[in-house]
Image: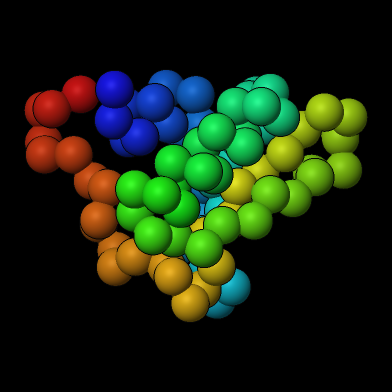
Length: 81
């Protein structure tokens, strides 16, 4: 399973801003968020951090600005999903 196929159905929303990229992983367990963060670091060499959202047991994964990939890096080809 690729990271894209894992994220799209479960974390369809995110944001790219001046501080990097935030994946809205609110529906993930903390262990899943840690696992995803580790994959992004190991496989893609991204510097990631995990932030609490303010709600109980909800977390987001951030990719720091310094290691933010170029736009479209994870975009699947049209019709691939």
